[in-house]
Length: 229
Image 1 (cartoon, helix red, strand yellow):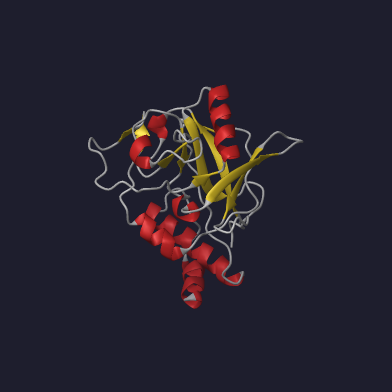
Image 2 (cartoon, rainbow, N blue to C red; image 1 turned 90 degrees about the vertical axis):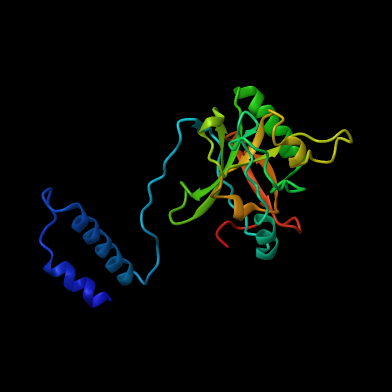
């Protein structure tokens, strides 16, 4: 395969504005594959991140540690129909989901729940969204980060909300069956982070020097894990 790519690049004339777009794309891809083979196959193609104008970035840093969870547990949980609210607490579909999971996809510590409520109130936001994406601080590394949600219409169909409320006992989290259309602010899980955080517990800490909010994902044993593991 590498010989074929080298041969193609040697025979391909310089790419100009008049070169057909299909050839330009193929040439770019071939040069990338060749470079990866020279580098030992490591790395990933450059990506372009698209940010919805409805989701406003805030000064919240990325966590250093988080982890995937049990694949068996994740698969069983993900099989349930989980298409929830994205517009003012009502589902994007005109009908209630056929199956409602008994528990939220992510657990929140009391500290995280309290901080999220205060932050949403102080910034007049509709919620907070948890994302899993390429780190802005470390090349070729992944990280978790928070963004404020200014407009729920900017959320995707598969971005799932987690209630910030608890039941009358003051401890038990409000279940999805009671919170999916309650019109209250939520923590939203971006669809790109869903399988990574499913079944885990989210805690937060505040950097005393910068004031940044740092997400911490915990496994079932309470250990903080690496998002790149």
